[in-house]
Each structure stands twice: as C-alpha cells, then as structure tokens.
Length: 141
Image 1: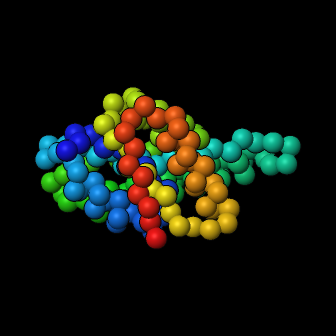
Image 2: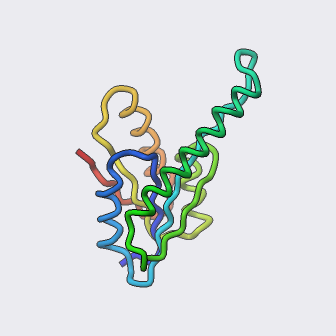
C-alpha cells in the first residue's frame, strides 16, 4: 500500500479509471494529491498583455475545475489534497512529487490520436524519464 500518491489531471475523461486505481492501492491513512498544471503564455509582439492575461486566467480556472472534478470522485472520508500550479506540466509534476515526498505518481496514457497523443505522450514520457519516484502508467482505452 502507498502512503502518499500524486494524481495529475488534465481534465480528460479517464479520471474514473485513475481514481479506482488509487482507491485500490492507497493505505487506509494515506493521502492523495490531485494536481493540475496550468500552462502559462507570455506576451509577444503578436499578442497584447491583456489578451495573454485573459488566456492565462482561463488556463488557471480550467485547472482548478479539473482538480475539483477529480477530487469529487473520491469518498468523503479519504484524505484528498487539491493543488494547482503553473508551469510546464512534466516539470511541475516531478517538482510537486519531490516537494511533497510522494511514494507514487499515477499518470495516464490515453488512447488519443493526432497532436493530442503526441503532446500528452511527451508529458507522460518526460515524467517517466525524469522522476525518481515510482510511476504507475494507466493505459486508457
């Protein structure tokens, strides 16, 4: 059984499968940290600061919504911590795992196609390559 599990979410429809995995392997007095990483755009010559701020605010709002949605799938008696950070997803997932001293990261490998599969696959791959924690890769159909 794992005492502290990090469960990153990007708001995908596969949360139920990941939550069930956590419920099956977490210690009775364990903690699950539900994490979403909000991306961050920077202003450029092509976009005004106001537009960039508006997009960044939306990304952060979406990240909070993703965390709230996944956290709501756990039983009320479970120790669930919600967390939203800003940055590059794989880097921040590994940073939070280290800072919070988690025992396990559960991350999804979705069956998406096209650019989504490439982008999500690269995040998952980077977490796997750079993490010094155990990682459970959940394949979703």
